[in-house]
Length: 380
Image 1: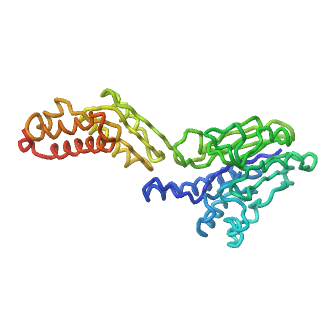
Image 2 (image 1 turned 90 degrees about the vertical axis):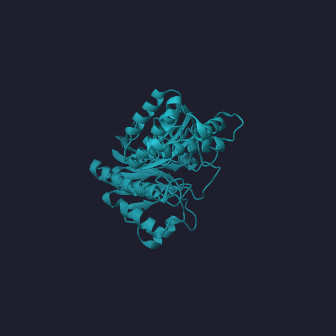
Image 3 (image 1 turned 120 degrees about the horizontal axis):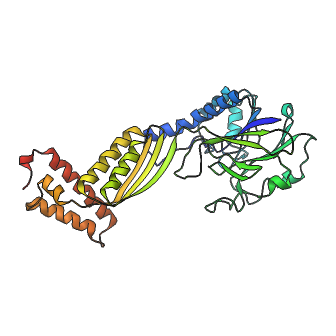
């Protein structure tokens, strides 16, 4: 029997350029924290090995410090680690892996597989058929040699590769680094451990993507897991358990405001978020000035609670009601004319989208100024 953890796509060194510097720093650090969590889980579960199916690093040019930190994060598990280069960290003649070797930071229990072949784990009767990427993009199936590669009798046959199972994955990403969808069957594998797709995914009974350990995109494809795999005997079906290890959960919300209760519902959803959440929020629709202010307050309160927040309110039209105008003292006079013009800019179908956005922002800013003034000093 062999029990191992299957993980992939750590993307150590990801920059997170869409976020502020402080937010990006925390998201980058979480990737190390989750590697340490995987090591701790491996020790606690007493597994035989941890298989990392490619893209350990996001870039070949990560700093020496990042390389050292990554291998330092593995110390919580003193069993066998097997690491495979993927498309982001391909085993080039000069690569992040050769730099790691020169830095002498790869522990003896860490096997970095830089050439295609078989790695034997004799203690648990397992043969790992490994297909590292030796260039970023290839149009040949690097796992094809699995079919004709012999392994010792009585050993589990486990494939380890990085690429796209042809015809299975979404969004047209299966154009390079292809892997035949029948590879586990044709190569008589007990299990095929894959990386490249960032969500954990069952392709078939013996073929699995582990997904990235720490979510890095606003995409609902079940990232943030590792797979705990048990093979009881050669030829037996694998027992696979998805284990959540990710620190942050990313959400992508597109909200449309039509009635006041929509505002209340959005505020309630925002209030439920906390420090482990990353949110991208887009709000569209039409609302009264008071409700628009409430949305802005809720967004800023949320920003203080969550790990990172990206917000787009450009699709939200702010149309003051009679009550709003009365509250602001804008029922007549110059201020009323300004409000009317700003409303007209939002309602005009010929208006430029940026102009519509600026008009809404101007109304909210005007409301804030007016509310900060003593009531008897407001325009009448």
